[in-house]
Image (cartoon, rainbow, N blue to C red; front, side, top):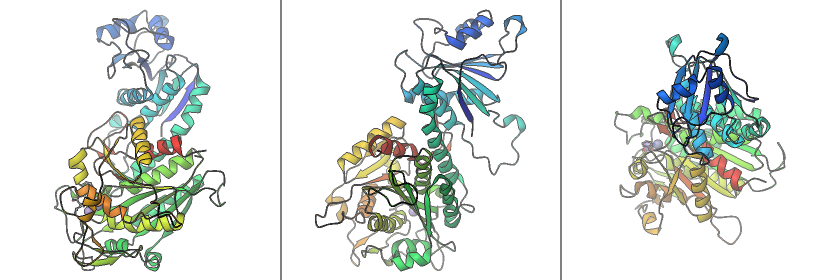
Length: 511
Ligand code: BES
Ligand code: MN
Ligand code: ZN
């Protein structure tokens, strides 16, 4: 991970000097601080160069000036990179973050970069660094032939600011969140022969170093608990399923002590490879189904983020891990399975496996923890991509407050969600002729009937009132993986959900 520091301003003698600049009244934006210092030291070459490049400081604009000659032959930066921030006074943390992300490709070939952030408020300076860091993620584990000149060189970023103390305070939790994002991206990027359920459970144990309690259940425990739906999905694979239970006690109890409040709960679909099972998928694009564990990956990354920044909240994260494979032992269309809740399910389509996994994990979560709310994340349906594309995740909820909080948190961090309708009529589509329900509701509204299936396992709070547990389901099939570079998300695993849910907790469920 990039080393990021907040320092007193001083001109660098090598590497990159980054100038985040707001639009000027006309022509080249006003240069202050280090920007002005390097312009003066170069006899005005910076202002002339930016003018020649047509750089106005507009949002998304950039210009690179190479090795400006400094007076007296003094050593200076190898490149000066100007980044547009848009209209002065209109900068938001999100825009600062995007500008930072956009900077990375322009400086990545240098070993060190200094960001002249004197004109930015401390939270904006930290956000700029956060964007830069998030964009720097790479998954190179399996490349053995990258040419030296193609390797990223950037190691250190010094953010020059007169408000270093305030910026450092804003930075500390961001760094922890970035760690969670990177952990999640690593898990989702791994190929399915390496990251099977057992390996993923093993990797969850790195959270123990952060003070998270990690328990791993295997098929024996699952059989004892009666998790017939999860086990039905797993039975076609030679790989054993796992259920990982992660607990962070941050509300005051401290590690090991009993939770003082009922925890908030996050549940992830962790299908480490989804062939479809006997209802097998077509070959084209099937490799994408290695990231059918992105919901689980987000939950693990979220736990790392919350524990890493010592969030004042009691939280449990549960991930149901299995493969979905065809074999002589695989579950068949027409099979009836008994879930842990006692409800029976006719498996019409073995490719609708995520909801079967979630059914048992959600029921287990509710029974064991009686959580304050449950939020599940799952790459659940192709239909949500048809509905929302790759710009929003589908949000389904039985609770308006929770839904609104999620929508607001998503806007704030750039992981947007769009609430989808639910209702009795959709639920009816799950009627089965032989069991309590079937696992698919047909093509129309496929994401919605999938959400209704899950909702049947959410249950109610303890006591006679039959109050439903507040619940939200995020269908992240369209947002878990990006086919192109985005400002703060390089092409590949996005870790969608880590920042969103970290922000939800920070804004509403701490202290
Ligand atoms: N993992 C898939 C959903 C998916 C599709 C995720 C494309 C990411 C990209 C899920 O298990 C699945 O196969 N869903 C089926 C449900 C259908 C059989 C009712 C689908 O969406 O086709
Ligand atoms: Mn499937
Ligand atoms: Zn799946």
